[in-house]
Every structure is written in C-alpha cells, then in structure tokens.
Image 1 (cartoon, rainbow, N blue to C red):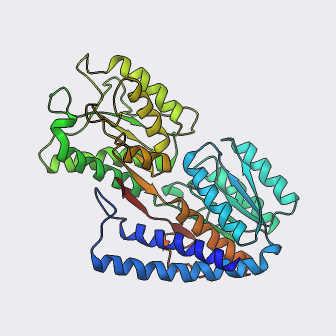
Image 2 (image 1 turned 90 degrees about the vertical axis):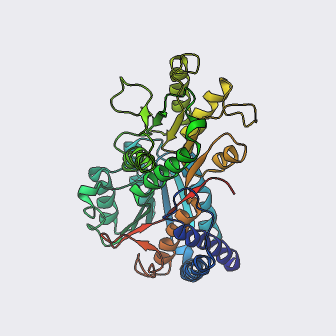
Length: 399
C-alpha cells in the first residue's frame, strides 16, 4: 500500500513543481528552458519526499483518523476532479473518511459538520459554501476548536483580503490549501491579450477595429470570481494597448457591470448556455454586432457557452467553421478535449491533483501526530499567513 501512496504523491508533487515553474507564463505554460526543467525536477523531488513521508506515516496510523470531507457542491466539475484525487490519496493511505455534499447551502454544510463531530469525526476538511465569508468560516473554526479537532479549509476562500489571517489565525489547528486568487485572472488576461495581438483581424469579425467580448462571472462575492473578472479584462487590455490595439469593448453597452453572473452561484454550464443563447439572439453576425470573444471564470461555463455557439454553427472544430475564442479556468478534462478539438482556445490550469496532494500532506501530518503545517517548506506558503498553502496555476493551450 505504501508503494501505491508513494507513486501517487510523487506524481502529484511533480505536477505541482512543474506548475510552479510555469506560474508566471504569459500565453503558454508548457515550455521551459533546460535549466528551468532541471530546477523543476529538483523542486518536485523535494515535494515528493516530504509528502510521501507524511502520507506513509499516516498509512500506519490511519486507523486513528476519522476524516470528514465537506464539499460545497458535487456538481462543480473542478471540485469533482479534486474529490476524485483526494478520495484516491486517502484510500491508498488507509485513512477512514466520509464525503459530504453541501449542495451549495451553508446551513446544510454546518449541520453536516455538527453531525460528523458528534459521530466521532476527528479531522475536518472543508470546501466552504459561502466563499470569503468570515462569519461562515469562523463558525466552522469555532465548531472545530470546541471539539478539539483540526480543520483544513481548501479551494474556496475563508476570508477576504481585508480580513486576511483573521480566521486562519484564530485557531492553531487550522490551515488552508488553495490558490492565490488574483493569479488566475492575471494569467488568463495575459493569455487573452497575447492571443488577440496575434489574431486581431481574424477575431474582429465585423471589421470595426474593436473586439466585442462577453464575460461569465460565476458567483457574486466569490474572491476568485472577482479577481478573474477584473484581471481577465484589465491585463488583456494592458497587452492590447502596449501593442497599439484598442481595449476590449463589452458587447452590451447597457450592462454597466460588464459581466453575467450565475445567479445560483454554481458556476454552471447551464447558466452560461442560457445567457449565451439569449445574447446570440440579438448580438450576431447578421446584425453586425457579433460577440467576438468569450471570457469565462471556469471551464464549466466555457462548455456552456461553446454549446450555445455550436447550436449556431460556430466553434465546430472544422476548417470551414468560424471559431469564437473562448477562454476558461481549471483545465478540466472536458476543457482539454474541447481545446484539442479546436472548439476552445485556452484555459488556466487549477491543479486538482496538486490541491488534493496538499490536503493529503496535512492529513498525513495529523495522522502521524505532527503539527498541522509540519514539513511544508517546499510548498508555496503565503507571505502574509503562515498556515496558508498556495497551489500554483499554469496556462494551458493544449498538449
């Protein structure tokens, strides 16, 4: 069993190391100089050794752990990828765990946590429903503290920038594994800007010298959604202006927000598909005002937008078909296939295996009786909050 765990964590750690080397890439994240590749291999080896030791020790003491893993919703494609990877890591380590679906309802998740603690759960791993809410996350920390059990938050922010460290600093058995929220927006914006500079005349379907774009936000108040919405456009505009091109123009002048949001907060393909179908009824080539670029805060919404385009004869992946550039975030398997098929342009990889790997390391520490943040020196740790691990993003335009 230990050999299986070692193989898993070494693979995941190598992915993390390589992603870290591509963290500042602009339009592609898959090329590296020999020196960079060598450095990445060294970093990956260090991560692999650290994680392997922690999880292997947990394998011997795993019978003492009873882990509750609480997901904000099972319907999120990226979260499903994390759940698959984490299930495997914990199963291979021989650790007892149970998954819970919050179904996008914070009250439901709170009740699930209460029940799990009463039933003997002694480690909480929480993908919080209400992202960025100090009140919601502090309530969970208080539950964990009262029960004397550690809590590992992951993926969804537990506090906004203005409250950074407030919740995570309130309990010594608390940590966070996630991403540096602005990074995805910056990387996506640079990717979009560079693509448009190279393909401006082709993308400008009506030849008016401007690019008309749609933005699908995801969830109001979500830190990741806010930064992706902001920097996905701002950084693209910066690249365009630097290259003598005009800034992007939102397709609907009456929408001063310059985005369309999933009202259910699920970042869903269905919401984007419905919006895009409605948009295309008015904004199309026949009317001379076709949407020429689509920016999505996740790959699920990108899938929905592409489906709507397909229904109108766009983005079919054939040479005789007009393709509207569509960009997302997550690098899900479905998005990778759409890119390979020529139906989607690019995405930003949010490393599901790397996320699971970071969580597994902390779970391993608890199982081995160590401090929660023990031996995390090779991970990317926030400069401001010492118990906050960042899993790096990477640009993805195809393999």
